[in-house]
Image (cartoon, rainbow, N blue to C red):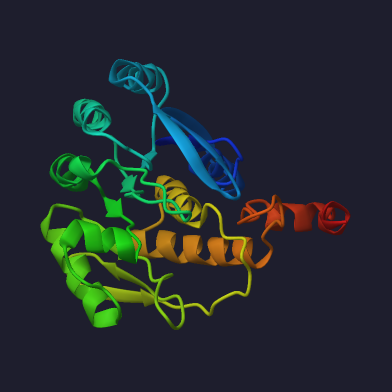
Length: 271
């Protein structure tokens, strides 16, 4: 079993962040580990507060993992401040793990700023060059590049710009496009599109976290970037199609739908 580390924030309602990452790692047959960068106050209706973890504790968590357990891939999620980014970058440069997947989480679906604006340049300078894959959605790619992105040509332009910043592979997620949710992967030479139709559901909490974690888990298992992205796209599409109607707002995706199906308990769980 491969060991996959998530470095991200905690979601108290369990649909995104560290919790979504660990569920995804398990569903993909890998062993999940975590370094918590922040504790958020959130539920399906929004994010209402955030407490950053002290940089020395972040460094200590990373040391504790790498000095004891082999790490086959790393997913980086919510990193809200400059000190957090520098702590993570320092330690990843020290331990030099393979298969770093960076998901530049900046704004929650409810509009809460999950990254301080002044931290953007540090993210670009310190983390993007370490990333084997970076997975921004359209608003995040716009913040990183300064471009307006509303169609596939603009997505390609943004992917090339982010690749020039040092990321080895860039996946621009197209969930905010007006038509089908087409994602675009640029590996420095080739453009690959991953297309899927839209699913009529409001329950999409944690989709970005889940997708990037699935990519990391499959890279850890030895799949190529394109194979890992395709597997992750299929996985998140299924998880959204069978999303859980939990809470009063945007419910979570269903990380274990296929496992529930195989176990013959999905109908019982669904009630």
